[in-house]
Amino acid sequence: MWKIAAAAMAGFRKHLDGAGFTEVTTPKIVDQSSESGANVFTVDYFGSPAYLAQSPQLYKQMLVGVFERVYEIGPVFRTEPHDTARHLAEYISLDVEFGFIDDHRDVLALLRDTLAAVIDHIDHIDHIGDTAGDDVGALSIDLPVVPEQMPVLHFTDALELVGAHPGEPDLSPEHERTLGKWAKAEFDSDFLAVEGYPSAKRPFHTHPQPDDPRWTNSFDLLFRGLELVTRGQRLHNHSDYVSALENRGEDPANYSSYLEAMAHGMPPHCGFAIGLERLVSRLLEADNIRYATLFPRDIHRVQP
Image (cartoon, rainbow, N blue to C red; front, side, top):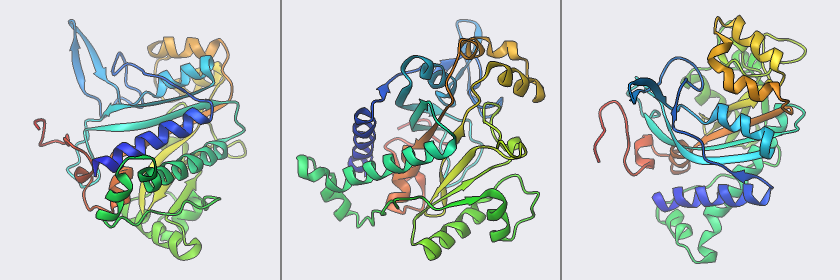
């Protein structure tokens, strides 16, 4: 299992290096939450409160202004209160951010190419001297074919398709499974992108849908009926960030360093993050994400 995970990281890195990205590292002890005020581990940082990073989100956005195209492979931390087969408190995130885009469809196209490269690397790495290809066979893994064009469904259409109330702010796990089966039957695809999630359900830095600000230029990518990626286009104008934070009742002063980077000028940009363990667990079609990591961390476990 771990040789397949290692091959996935190698394929991710190889593809992005070839696409002109710069690998970066960002702090895992931070002075504010990356996504929201919830699900963060608080630590004592020399007598002051700090947090374990939920994601490298704010840092990788700032670095787009320097390098234009960046990626990172590293741990992220969530105080997930859910004792489920799909949640971990610590996992490896494969993060990407890049600039000079038109909208979230550009990031979906890059995500498609990245996943195709990762899966191809897993499938063929035995040709360059490693053994992951043999492990794919040993575990009877049915590697997916990544379609040339990801099928895309708007969030409102997804709600209608699964018979959910039109006012629902998100898709439930049951909805995701239903949509996964629909994509397989309709397009013979293990993947489905659902775009246009409600603004209320996305982080403050998410770009609104230009023709209807109730929705966003964002998407979830479902893989075999489970959310694999949640990302989209970011805001990039300083004034839009200040307004977005104030509209959510947050003090822009708490994001001073981040906003300073935006004030110096930032291109339209977007990005995504793939949870390594979730990707591997779906490749294995395992019934528990804990099978896809060496030392799982959940609400019950903090020892080897």
